[in-house]
Image (cartoon, rainbow, N blue to C red):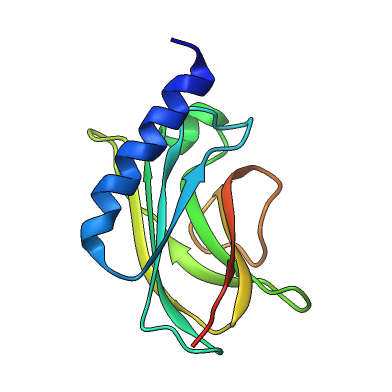
Length: 139
């Protein structure tokens, strides 16, 4: 099976798992810098201006394996214009290679970005993009 076929199969499995969670669901596939990573974003309690966002990523290697300087995965809400907002760091489970975070987005349209960072409280997103997904909220 090719890597693309495996990733598609994993995405379909995650979609089935996420179907029981309620809310809008978006499949997320890792970037070229983190090709084994996949998962989903769930949007709940949404209005035109905010929503509860759950990020769930699997097959996530320890950040230090990507680069010895990295220690954390950080989730950002990036609006079309303006400054990105740090949602928080993924709660990482190394034995399961799983990362999760739930936070409220203050935007109605934004990109969820997950970056690998040197610490869990950076001022702005770094360049090492692990995954991203564009979100547009509707009533």
